[in-house]
Amino acid sequence: MSGNSGSGGGPTGRIGIGLELDATHLKILEVLRENGRISVSALAERVGISRASAYTRFEALRADGVIRRFTAEIDHQRAGLGIVALIFVTVRQQMWRQFRAQLAQMPEVEYCAITTGQHDAMIQVRVADVAEVHAMVTERLANIPAVKATETVFILDEVLRRPYVLPSDRERDRGRGAPRRPAPASSSEPEQGQGQGQGQGQAQGNGQGLPLGKMRFVGAAEGRAALRDAT
Image (cartoon, rainbow, N blue to C red; front, top):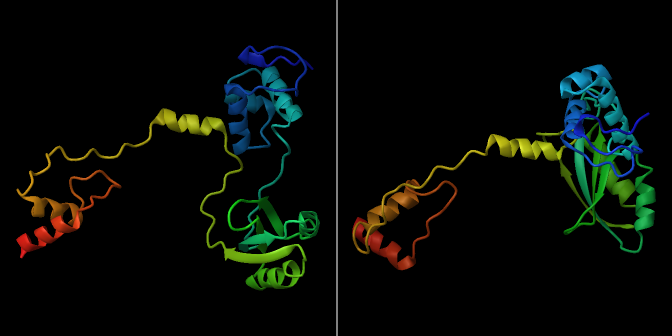
């Protein structure tokens, strides 16, 4: 099979070695994110390239390790795993190997990451009920010598979950243009001692004349003067 990169005009050679992604590769990944079982012919049509080029590029993405594997996405609620929890773990620093080995034997662990901050690792688990989380923390994790402390947070709602994100997602967002905040009112600042109390009262009371998301701070002496004027 040829290593030609297709319509991108890239150099020929063996695929899967130092593959440099271009806009066409990213478009292929966008389409596969929607439907990983799409045929090569349909993929080529969606991307706007020939079938041969689509196949070559797809195989290059697999050989290079950009596409690591294909899997199914399930509804965890319907599968009987309606409880999701994050367990933050403090690990004894000389016992990381033991921690990793014990964690690999826990089938309810969906994800684990080493983190910065107060804790050393974050574990995400999916189980049938809260009692299973309690048992895992108090009986299983607590009995691992490598675990020094834990903190558990239950997830109430998974608002957003994407299969993966791509650099092209951000570029497309920039192309659309982010909404701009409203400009501040064009009225000039009142001079010292003239309408100061009224202007400050409006700024503090309803925020009119100020850019969205900004505050106006009033000095203590000015604030007292405004209160005297108001009374």
